[in-house]
Picture (cartoon, rainbow, N blue to C red):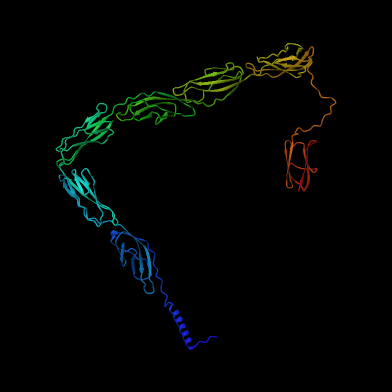
Length: 624
């Protein structure tokens, strides 16, 4: 235990009191209200404003604002009034003093001072005599120290060098004074009107002239009369038509140009000018001819062809036109074929250089169409039917029609009438002759003429002998000229060789005969009779015969190419068959199965397939 004497106790009390007093002093007497300043953007102005009054930020405090700049060489402030001193960039700080319960606050933004536009004094207009020769310009007053330069709106009347104006002719010009920019001031300009007085010369006439380009190569111009002694110059408004060198005019191509004669100022006289029109007549070009053209228009397309313009000693552009665009239309040098007919193509050449436009050159363009016809129906007639009258197909062409038969024995043609003859197939060709705007065309149709059934007499019994060089067959009577053909029922007795009945062995058989179409007659009906062969038999080559003791084998289905495929997925056996299924039987472990999916249990499953009595498939499968 520590004991404190009286002196120690006193010291402790003093220290404790000091600590308490210090803590109380650090507490605020009262809480102040926060001053809120609104935002404010950068401020930009120009030096020529001199002074500007800025707008302080919005605030909730009534405290007064003061301004300060980071760079007082650019601007200074008194209150919110800013005095601009030089161009540049600085930061301006708005400081609001504390007021009542509100504390002080600041807001700082960028402050830009751009170069100003100087203020220029008067630049007075002047009037001087041409005889003065020159004058010196005095620059306007300006708050900028930029240098001055001067220009003349018409250097042919007054030319400027430095601040000296040289008077060249009577008239008015605008003198522009331009002050260059400095670091503090922008460029500036002002103008004044300078009037130069002089006597206007009295000029005589300057008469228009007309030239033919091939007849005159050059012309020397004579200036008009004048009471001034100034020199003359001549200019051409259209140098493509005529050029001027000194006083010599050279025509170049057809056209017009204005020639201006200008007299220079002299002896107190101003310049003077007058003009005339020079007309240059062109030469006629020498052009060739256009040859007539004939083209054939395909039935399914409309071609275009490139036209060749006439020859010419001029380089002028050619233009082509068609008198009937429905027949031929023109695009540049291309002729588009549109329809059969005739059109006149006209070629014109434009003026070029010394040549004028050409006279029109023409040619005839003929388009011939290819006629198309609808198909004519084919006919079927009976021999002896009435005549057939030909009906011409519809055609856009008016060409005459002619007709040709491919076989005059079947059909003959007189005029447009067809007379039928023998039976058969004939082609009738119709030809339409060419017309003025159409080429010839053809079309065809056929006529099948069916023959009349011939009348056949009795086919008597026939007899031939062995060894005859040819058969002794006597055909039945017939009103048809058609050829006969035969067939034999029993070829062990007789055969038909190259259309002849030949004996094979003695015996009897049935002989059949048919008459082929001939003339107006068609094929006959078949007739039959008995054919007897007599004489020595011709031993035919024996053919193997089946053994009488042979035991017939059981019939096996022909579809022995039948094949099976078995696919096992889990406990499903899928059986598919390629080939015939006739007589096919499938068993799984002796139980009938089906083609397709079969659900089976676990274990070994044997699939057997039989086709008739033959096993064609057998396989065991282990099913899990």
